[in-house]
Amino acid sequence: MEVGILLPIFSLPSKYGIGDFGYEAYEFIDILKYYNVKYWEILPINEGGVCPYSPISYYALNKNFISLDKLKDMGLLNKVSKKDKRNRIVYDNYKEQYYLEAFNNFKEDNEYKEFIKNEKIVMFAKYMSNKENKDEKYYLFLQYILDKQWNELKSYAHKKGIKLIGDMPIYPDFDSCEVKNNPECYQLENGEMKYVSGASPDYFNENGQKWGHPLYNFNYMENDNFKYLIDRYKEYLSKYDVIRIDHFRAFDTYYKIPINKQAKDGWYMLGPGSKFFDELFKITTWDRFIVEDLGDIRKETEDLRDKYNFTRMKILQYTLDPLNKKDNYDDVNNMVFYTGNHDNNTIVGWFNELFKIKQDKLKEFLKEQGCEDNKINYALIKYVLKSKARLVIFPVQDIIGLDENGRINLPGYANIDNWSWELLDFNDFKKHMDIVSKWW
Image (cartoon, rainbow, N blue to C red; front, side, top):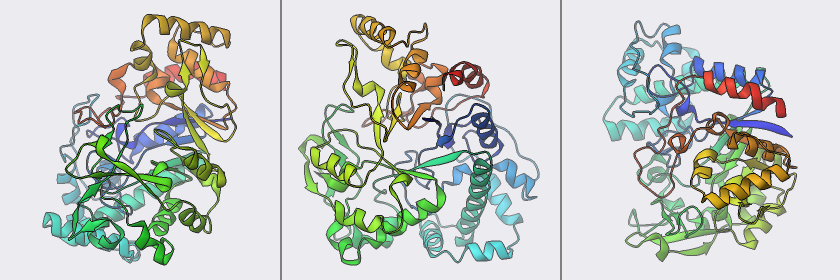
């Protein structure tokens, strides 16, 4: 069994209001190395809005993740003012002033000239230039810096024996470089959406979820063996050691909602299934993936997952039945076992919301399993570590024992706190890791 930690890039401690590819990320890697953690799950890092699961490009990286400190080290900035520390991110484009200064000070070199031969990045720069009425070269510069800083960080992680898990969001935003330049790959009528993405009612949200993304035109993409999607996977395979495939269900059957209706009014349509994955596995192997097989899953989805030996996910909060003192999920090797992920409450927040009788029954169950502890997050971490899973992943918040205020996202709701949690420093994390790391 190996151990991973989940912490989004944006949640890293920062002097500038949002986590980035700077020295705090390197410090975090050093901490993971010290405690014998092998994986860091970072969530999506593509350019987009506040929600990282609505990218506007699968090739461009999020400009918020540029490290101002590293720009200064390159000689592109003189003085940089810090922002006041707080435990919530403010998406206010604070860094933009420094990006513009660095761009004006930048001199093109051969490395840059080679980078901008990337057609996907050029396409993105043109899209952003038209959208924001700025010099196309400005966006090429930002992406060059992002690519450079990301590759440096990835190389450092590999040097320390840390593998990086990146997320492949299922759909892009409608107002995106992806849709604008590949409209034939989406279900559009006269360039507009008549149907949008979402999920049926399930344990995430009893009313279902209406995400609002454009749906794929799989029938069209099948004509050239899904090249549009395969190219995207090639890009991700070059960026990450492991890809977590978001909303795997959609490759079996995807949920289709009329744009003027509620989520519960949608229905399922057949996805590409094996036709797509047969093409994907011509370029890679099963061990490069984790699939999000959560939510309302039918047997055919499980069969598709198992046909390609995909590593499944298990979320403790969904499988433990406190009242009956049992775990309603198979204990298998080929899975990643989480206490929770970005869409869950923290483990302490989840426990606090249980009725007293369920809390007592859960404590009894954990004691029977030999996982008793005064701290409920510690007891549940012990329980996860006793499983057969080949990989277990703990969010930083669950290591520390934060309550619901440490939650990253509340799915299906427009919550001002979504995607805004930030770790102030590493002190508490290290204090708790001194204890829990002895258990693996």
